[in-house]
Length: 421
Ligand code: 2P0
Image (tube, rainbow, N blue to C red):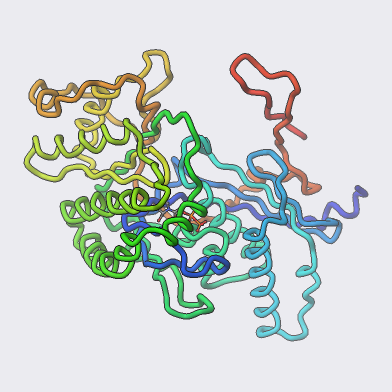
């Protein structure tokens, strides 16, 4: 590529968070616009532990839109990606026409190169599509000078992505309109609202990839009358109660609603025909352990929630983290040489009391949990100011890519990350 093109590569990098729903979204009333059958509410996790980073570059010299995910080039023609790109370009065009009809809008016709990475393994089973689409939409908006409400665009990438457009405690209001313009995410409280709240992601060692959310929820909508009942008669009241519990920082109410909603979501999966199983024996052991733990102390100190996979996400208050983590370590003894068991926010080690061990009384499941990510509520998407953090180099190609090797290594890994510049 000639040198004179290089200076015209415009680049922006942003990060976006993962969110965990405490009132779950499951089921669409419109598959194309991604409109849900019920409202939902989530907690945005801190980006110090879990985030997606995306660089978008635009240039007159690019011949086509291109996308790299975690170092590998992907097909950009996927309909949901195309919806997000089309919507951002439409909003950019509208903004320029409204603001200044004579403005030069040539850059709108420029092609984009997009490069995105997660700082957590996709294998951890965390909702990478939520952080991924939130980051894509936020970064594209920065690149094309679009401001204002963007959750409706992120929603068209992946439903849960709309909630990752804000920090703290976020509701996705299902809306009523056919065009989906009122199906938006809204911050209920910022991340600073409840500083004692802590989140532990218990990463379960899963053998198989579970049924994907998009097809799973389609089958549930078609076959589960429990899902219909949940959406019409349970979630509306639960949203009001959950928002109230968050605003009052009432941990007992928050925890009980969270556990009941997770259990009802998994009950709708079992009520789906054929049934969908996301929980495994480790998940069941975590559920039992949490209830016996709370019962032992005579108060609700800990809550669990599970999404479309076996990993447990635990909510608790800062003062209970060391004691509960020690109980997890006891009932799910980690591999002795398997690296650090607790990643993220440091957790002081304590001893488990003989009384607690006896009260929980479960048979330990060695290596059932691979590791714990210790985190808290965090902010929404951010712009990365440091230009050395761009994932694309000066001519708009990834700085790092994954190269595949024909020969597979002993550990089953047949790729390596290579620096391109
Ligand atoms: C949630 N989940 O509220 C629920 C709880 C999983 C269980 O949103 O088809 O990846 O892209 O809209 O958002 C996962 O579904 O599905 C999800 P699409 P999405 O977080």
